Image 1 (cartoon, rainbow, N blue to C red):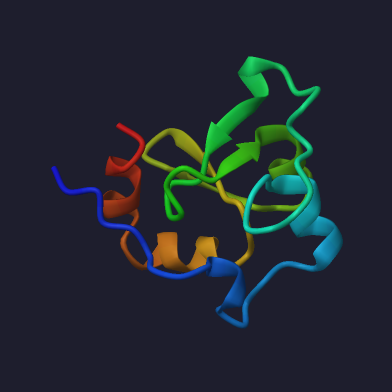
Image 2 (tube, rainbow, N blue to C red):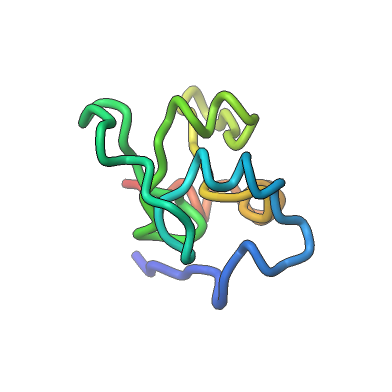
Amino acid sequence: MTNDTQTGSCCSTGAAASDAAHTAAVSGHGKANLLGGASADDQTTCPVMVGSPVSKAAAEAVGLFRDYEGQRYYFCCAGCGPAFDSDPAKYAANMA
């Protein structure tokens, strides 16, 4: 299995979430770390920008998620949703 990921920052694609939405959902990409008080059950990583931590609750609150084959995937920014949509099987495999 290859761990192909998008190069560069998804947040620079021009489809970035608003600053408030992005800051609420992501730790990394130079934004504030809001995972400090999050429970382990609330934390995941973005399947597109592998390794970028995401708060599930914050991402869900701003719509940064997709459901695919009965599983919910959470994104670090708005640019990752369209990337996921282009090849969901590829990005879902990154989470396996």
